[in-house]
Image (cartoon, rainbow, N blue to C red; front, side, top):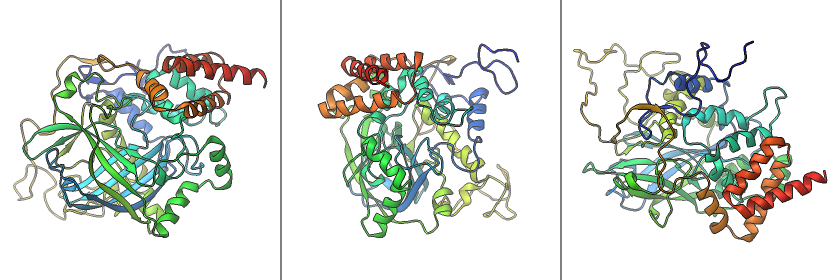
Length: 486
């Protein structure tokens, strides 16, 4: 077989890029005719059947969101009006583990929410961290594979993980979170949740702003040490699932306070960090938290498979008053998540009871496997003369933004304070105390000692020195000392 210098598409033609999707300008929207990106995402969504590829091991419960504050100045969305209570479903999960994996692996936790609103279903698909490893969705299949298993041995590999992370230094902020004290939550009840992405809100007057969602645990935020997590993994692989179920059965309903950060629309044009970069946070000193209400989980599923495994979340599910942003990861996920469910649980997954909107639906999606709800003998096309209504809005959309430029494959344009290591360094130096930093050094060193060698190990040392010189030096010294004694 001829050796390839670069990658190819499935038909053998040279692939243009595995790093950057095709966008309108460096900061513009992802374009639908980026065939390689769509092929990557569509194929990735079909790699494993029937469990989810990422987020396979999870748990869920039903509850309610009650809005206690007036945020109508920012959005007209019905579910976010003061006094409104909305039934909802939450699913928490690990990212890399398979269905039978332990709940207490060091891994980000998914924090997926479905709100059955009076205007249709709204899904918020986030994590227990406010940032993520990458900032372009075309890298997502590569990232997940690097966290899974080696193709030869079928074993997990710290070396493979660090190879990907060090070759993608934008991961530094998220990896710092992952290796810190919040890297393994004590329970699903004792972790925060974040929408992570930047979203748009639109009010009744048509005014737009950018928002980030924060769900702060009212149980407190607590983590497990590596030793505790390993012990629990051996004793009860379903520790987090059991804890959530049993707490609700006891009537100890976990709750989270929902707050948002709001950035005025025009601020995004000149803000010192790219506000749409998923590897960055917005400092609270610039955009403080604004309370919205409380989310409470108060009912376990009646059937785990039907109501948790068949639950299908997608950031593409929005309602009036909520829109997207130029976040490339968010835009990629609006396609990928729903497509994963089409493959995993069927073309009409949205008709399953757990996913069905609680409002009338007049959709022109037609037939397909397991069609349950149908439109009888009504017209199946639009426009039509048979009296079946259809939408026909033209002109500028209320949830859009401005974009112009040449089509290109490029990373985001850098802002004044955009870099891969700055916010991670701030977390290490300015947020953590000495005990947290010491535990972090032990955690990273232990992970590196778990099979990371050669060039990748040297790159990992430099990776942490770029985050913080002193911390990186301590990690290197510890690994070299303990590795030499092995």
